[in-house]
View 1 (cartoon, rainbow, N blue to C red):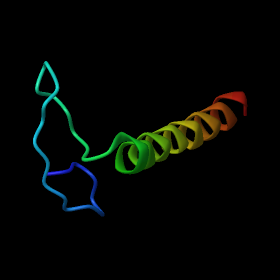
View 2 (cartoon, rainbow, N blue to C red):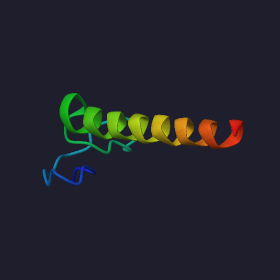
View 3 (spheres, rainbow, N blue to C red):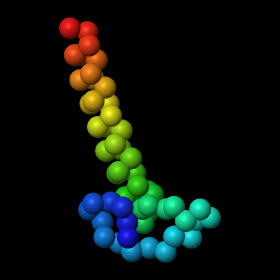
Amino acid sequence: MCASQTCRAAFFDTSQSRTRKWCDMNTCGNRQKKARLNANQRKNRTGARMSTS
């Protein structure tokens, strides 16, 4: 099953290491990675504001 919360697609992992998480990197994988990046950037901005006060 795809690791995306909004996608329930099933896929066959043909990668050499068998660690594929998303049905399609261009859609589901990209959304997940972008969401993680945005969350980390928000966290870092908040932490920077608190430490400079």
